[in-house]
Length: 596
Image (cartoon, rainbow, N blue to C red; front, side):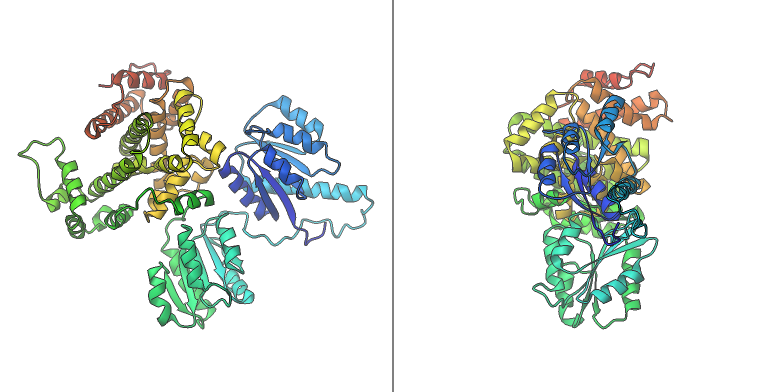
């Protein structure tokens, strides 16, 4: 095989996150990838381009994977065919292999190892092809292709992108920065940079301002901001003093002299990376585009954005005096906080002092109250155009998820219930954007989800729009400039493969909101499938007795019930909830406490 050969792959799967992960892994093994969401799209792509390998799922809408494989096997010159599926059936596997499918692999997989396995299949086919055509003497060419790969196979902690006028200087910096904890990629234009960042995440962008093209480095950063791509940026420029103020306005982290030595640029980049304790998340381009120009959901007030930034700080580092002063200066936030705090208190115990309220609640609960009130206000504005049935569905689901997430976070995971409450409240706000964008199409999805117990909302969304509500919620939170610590658990909470890279704390919040959402889903339809999902997720806490777990669930439901009454939302039926818990804990062998 020619060492400079560039391989091509057609990746076919109806789940967007799977396509993204698989394409990224395949690119790391030297493949140029084209994606298709179903068999019909795959056929169209196959007949318009040449591919070395087609990787397909089996269960997909429209033309399914088995039919696609049969079609490919009938072609005169066919590519390598690989099936990657979660549908385990030995009879179908034997049938596919008998027809000529090269490899059948069952999900879940390690995508990087799977990509290497696919490359071996393609390589072996090339070797066999050479033998059949009498070119067996070219053994020197028959080696693993040494292809320039755009991104590495591994998933290092940090990713740095470099855009310089000089390719040579960019390559030198790339080599100097690359190590076990950091990977780098270089691009030669703003278009190539945007294409790359629509396919993968990035932590730091090092860019020259004077690129000699149509756009300056500052203009490129500004356009990335508009696309909701906001890495830390280090700008190299001929005149740091003159561009410093403009650079600061658009969020550039550091402005350095273009004449700075490479070792100093490396040092500054490492300092920026060292201050990033966690990776920024990757939000699909489609979700970002949907939210970017969507004006029907108003922005969060700047005060709320500032307060949200405190959530990732240790409690003893949050400036209480500044927090109280900021809230006091905003009449709406102050009113919301006092109303929440005085709720349920007698007239003699109520307070009118914001400073006293902040001290009484503590900083994080204070922030939770203000952020929750702002979010609920935005929800009510958007929900005003929804029909009454869907509005009640969303409000009840949202409050149950938030209340349950807070309870599970505190009693199961021992992390902040206030942060979990906010996560539970905003995790499905993307539903509002999808509804506004797609109207009756999305209304039909909600109707199907509410009537058929075996259906999952995010799967229906993926099948129809190639993104789900969590992707859109995360993009909206990014647009609101909320901290990455809140965005990370949201964007991956329906994508278990991506969740593996989260920190232990983020995984705790993730489990809390996943379990809470499953509980909310179970209140919609009493069905064995949803009960099974709820029971399966709750089994993570099997170190606790069934009685202890039951008490936590009952407390979560009671909290949700009280919040629904406060906000005048539809109140969950206690008897129905007890029945749901009983179905989910069917193997417990212990009586369940009646939810009151």
